[in-house]
Image (cartoon, rainbow, N blue to C red):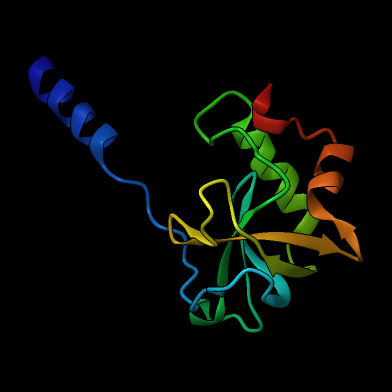
Length: 135
């Protein structure tokens, strides 16, 4: 019986996480500007914005100016909750940027610098206690 429980536990750990629901085409060029209300927050530095409640209109964004700890790392859940409280339902203005690898799209997300009421989102997160990379 213990072996069955252990095998089930191993299968549960191996189950992949559900993908973010954002399904809109992503901006492909650095400098492209897009905006909309935040519809979904995936973690402390990833979110979706879109004009309607339909996930097919949501653009998945990786923030260019803030690097939060991973969800399963210390501080990861708190980072997600902080970002969610700051932006959920609010309108962001974002500009696609090239990331460290020189790409605009990485891991099916557009890298973008976003502002809330004209203020850089990364700075707002830090002002509210966000710590880059959880350090």
